[in-house]
Length: 448
Image 1 (cartoon, rainbow, N blue to C red):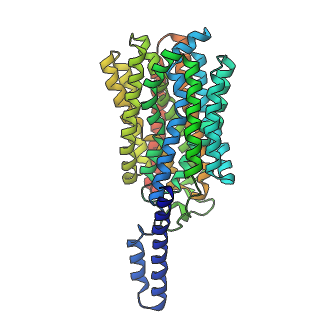
Image 2: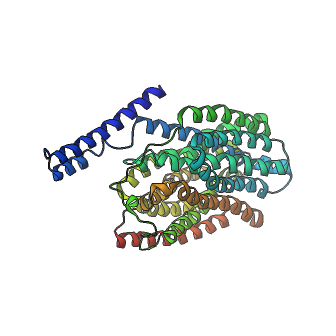
Image 3: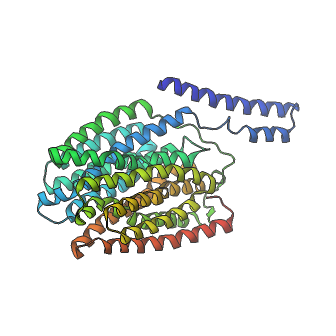
């Protein structure tokens, strides 16, 4: 099956290249005018596209692997109250473990991005699948140090760090026409995990305990993710060098009317700011429901509703970003996230929270892929292997900060509403900065 898809992708790409070569030879011989040949080349760009059926096989494989890897931190989210009780402390310890998983993923994304450039995505992804499994097994030992090291180094640094940031950069190199849609699909792995695993983990933890659940899930991740990476992942196709603003950039060229690295830093800093509030409800929703007298099973179901809504909406945001560009998508998504955070402050009954959770998921889910799409539109593909993981380093650092900060504020004040307000404050600063970048892009004429 895989070989048939691969061969059909190669045939379609070769046909496009042969057509382009035929146009060039006919134009050189005089049988077709250069102007007509140019028009035919433009009209036939879909034939010469790097996209193929194999591109979508790669994307589906990536989202499957990410949905498995992203389940690791969710074991802590669902078991947060029980883990805190077993360790005899507050919620800051399991919240810190969850934050270390995010932060480890952020650092690991940059390290593994360099490894991908040297060794290829296949080997790095296989290492990631094994690391997630070993990290969960270590965390299941039941010691505080084992929980922190297992989540931070295994699940985060060498696990999701080898999968999530490099995989987004890798998949973006397989697409040129529907890159936003593909990135939205692949980045939805976290939401597939958030929809599928919470009810399963809640039942497993209630039956077997959180330690056995972590250990068993680690074995499952290794058994599926490692063979998938070995069978499907391969070097991406050669990148086109025409018709793209970013590929025409000269070294040191200005981006959005400013130094390129400054524009990149501002974009990445915006992703850090918006991810702080993004992580707060997702990391603490089950515990938040428990404080309101809502059972853990209903809280886990609510988390599944949030992530399922986010998964479905992310496909819409991906389609929209292909139409209006990444920056506009970030603006609309950020505004929706602010409104969603206000919703958690406005209601505390179960039915209202189910509605707010779904609305929140619908709103914020398109933001992260839109950052990657914006980056790919503004900077050359040759820089994707380090710019994408670096941007996601700040995004995931924001996630880590938000997950920990909400737990810290809860332990300090005893309720979550203060954490939601702090998150909204970070979101408002990010919204102002991203509007500034949007105005710069409109003034400079670059499509982002």
